[in-house]
Image (cartoon, rainbow, N blue to C red; front, side):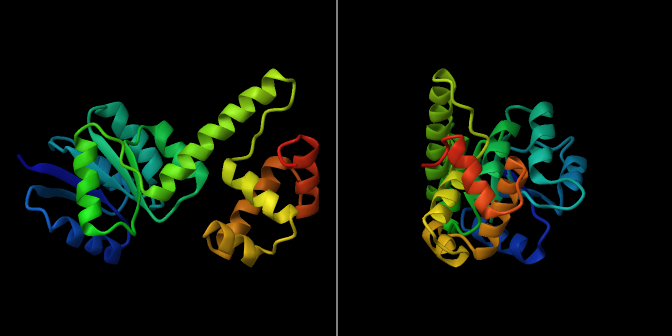
Length: 218
């Protein structure tokens, strides 16, 4: 039996690459192609779709909001986020929206097909690095719970943000932090912007001091 698939991706070259990867399995039938979440929502009604590959950053309606809407309409439809983002907050937001899996676009064709089948069989497909982040998030949540029980303030930072601050406190520069965490220097700066916003500070020294006072880093 064929698996009927919809793909939402705003980049034409990336869309072509995804379709090429899926073409290796004749049981996968591409029924819908959409350039954003809004277009996908327009095309879905009346279609019998088994699984959706969903980009996150798209114009008009992003993948997370589209996932939330689609899951409300049809909870049984499987949705896999297929994205270049391994940001902790986006992973968490996607899971809360109802995503059944979270894969990076760097997955090979055979890997992607295998993970699609795994999802259709009730699994939760995740790229290896994403699974590690999910474990880190669970550990951080448990640590936050323990801190709450002992009277310490709950941590509002993600595990990746905590890890980044610890490296920053150790004296590493942005490029070194990026290499250590296997992310770009631009992503390091983006994480720092989020940290500054959450802690209501405007520089790294103040951020480190605030996190240390709250015993989020040591």
